[in-house]
Amino acid sequence: MTSPDSLAGQVRSIGFACTGCGRCCGQTEEDSGLVMVSCAEIRAIMAATGLPWEEIAEPYPATVDDGKGSVFALGWCLRQEKDACRFFSGGRCRIYTSRPWICRTYPFMLDGDTLVVSACEGRGSPIDERAAQGIASDLLCRRSAEEQEAYGVQAVLLRNRVPAGPGIVVDSEGVKVYHG
Image (cartoon, rainbow, N blue to C red; front, side, top):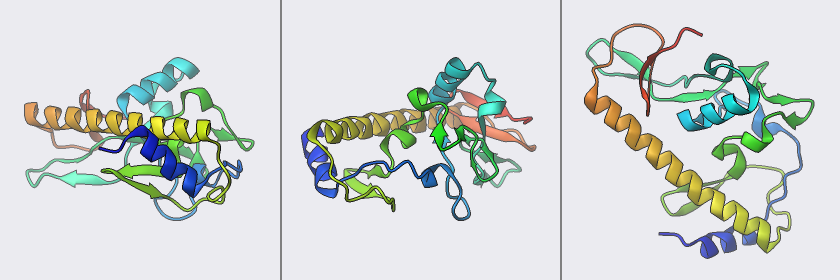
């Protein structure tokens, strides 16, 4: 398992400073800019904004066909408007304090214990130890949250039959029909 200090050292050696370009908040190619979110993240955004679920999230576009008549999404992504996250406006994130883990850690992510870095113009910029430690901590929290969500989805699939029909989403809270 990757230690926070080791991870922070890797982040520091790569370097990063957000330039505020907003490219990570928008669609630059097909399926880019999609922000996967967990139920807990959607609920945090609901609490911060007062918006209902349907105005925050939509089913992730990739689906699973179970071969028994059910086709469903395995989770949610933030809604997009005009090929950008609906919360990105005027060059700023309107939900910055309650933004999802993927946004907090971009352009970094963990694949197992391997640090993966996406293309970003802020890459390679000097970063201080405190900021690198913060990113490392967020990456480890993100991995834990993603694992919990995946285990929750798995448990839902084991306990429930997914019905046939449009707009079905399986998430860690259950099987939902989306009408948005």
